[in-house]
Image 1: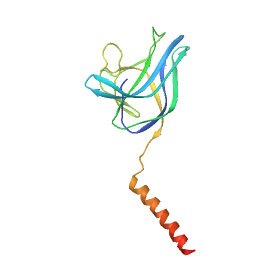
Image 2: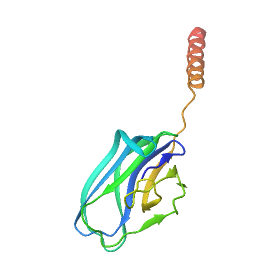
Image 3: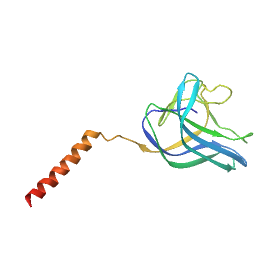
Image 4: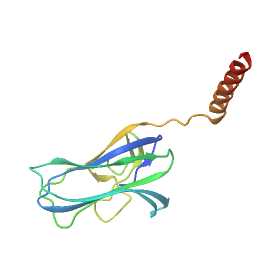
Length: 156
């Protein structure tokens, strides 16, 4: 899946909705560059692996240290296992780009074509939207504090 960030968010875990029995499931969250249908990995932001078994369709979640997504950058969430699942649950948006939560322009990779919109059900837990503190405001606050300390010292 290749979602781009619609806003700056911090993520703490990601999960896949799947029915698996004794499967080695791999997870990865990557920052990517996209040129047409070519995707290259810039950085691995989080990854994990475990052997899982479910009782029917269940969420399989991976927790990781919070990762900040940057608005406008592209990200790839990948879940992989060998063999067949017992049961799949897929989103199909009829090859029309769609948006979910922190992500815009979601794409799937079901079948042989990456640029389609059939994607395995996944979820991400956002810790919260991040807001940059404007630097001039923070410098003014520090300056005001230093001035107040200087005036107090002068009064002594």
